[in-house]
Image (cartoon, rainbow, N blue to C red; front, side, top):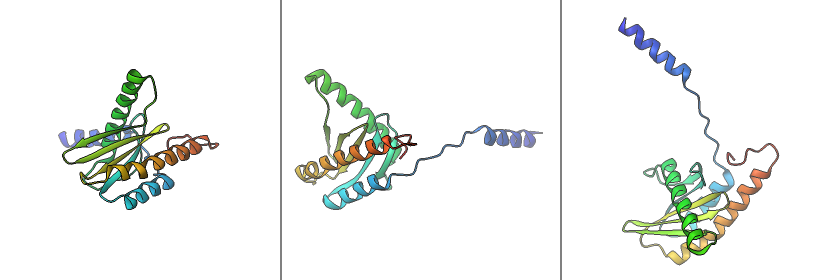
Length: 156
């Protein structure tokens, strides 16, 4: 009797779960991330996430979980927007977190953010010089994709 209940429970579990489709990473944005990593020495990886924490695409090493990092980046982005608005009444552009193990820089990119991870030895000026235009291009590209007919915007 117990074996039958276990089998029934397993079958019901399979039937009641809603399949989730993961959007394909955007090839243009992914190429931007890879090119950025190639141009900046000591860059560990990068990701693009929506402002609500959904992963758009990433170029991260295997030991970093991209969806969790996307959620953290969105939380930091939200706090930074609020802080900039409260302190100066203006918009947010970027935030730099310096840690003993390296740097995390989050750039506003339209409805998304570009998060860049770098080693402590990175030239932070070079990182900004290369990353800021990438964030602008990503924002423009994602905005254009969202305007395309039949597009649902963020899943591209």
